[in-house]
Length: 148
Image 1 (spheres, rainbow, N blue to C red):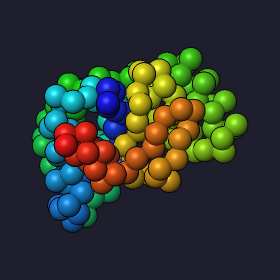
Image 2: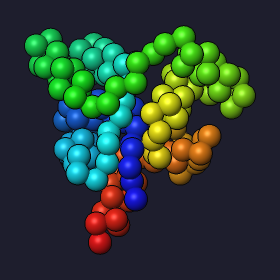
Image 3: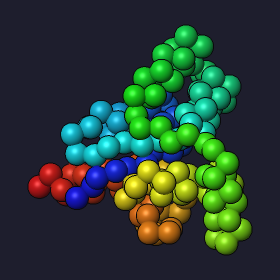
Image 4: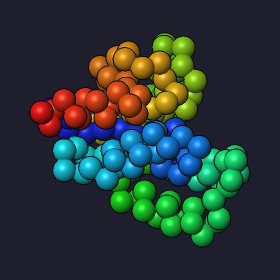
């Protein structure tokens, strides 16, 4: 059973990625399906989301649209960054040879009791510190199999 799912910025961005309609639909389905899981993200992930959609998209979102989306994302459970999380992430980064943003994702997921991290950044299918890493598409498959 899926209880808590951590959603990173790479998946949040897919909500508005018109160039990837399948991934966009999957992201919207995942975010919209709150019956089966508690969705968690981090303050860093939503900040990264905002920067990505306003400065790096092929067609950047208008500021007002991006701010509304940012506001909507705060309805998810949001893990705040604090010194303890950053220190833990630094240790994870060193011990597992991850980038700092990836280590923060892992530590935020651990802190919030997540079973899964849904991401388009990590290698899929691996387990890091007891957390299953899944791509957006794989996570949708997991959810569909549970519904059967």
